[in-house]
Length: 155
Image (cartoon, rainbow, N blue to C red; front, top):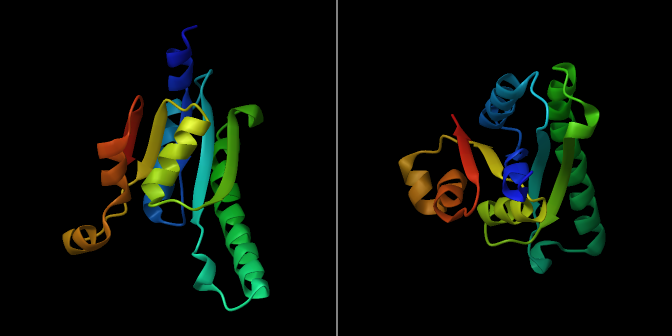
């Protein structure tokens, strides 16, 4: 099988605690349920704060611990959705990544490349036009900068 075709069966779903992320997970579950040969990776990105963000090393350690616990809880919940739908355990991976990136979109696309995924699935946050102008949109950044992959934006 051509490696490009094989990569298209590797699907990265970027998740967080939002309803839109949950809709993305449910969409993929419903679309692929009963089909074999697909491999799903659930990922949540924890943006690494700047070095001077914390007053002490212990404060940083506690923050990292709390973020990892929260991320693990989110991912395990979504992982369970696939397990209960009959997906094989070896076909659904999940992990939280703490990274220093210019944007969440950049982190997601870096992980896509690291994991050789041919499809990225994201939930659209539903931010206002004003918020998008000020902060930018992760889904918009991914749509405009992704290369060599399919992007599914679920609303």
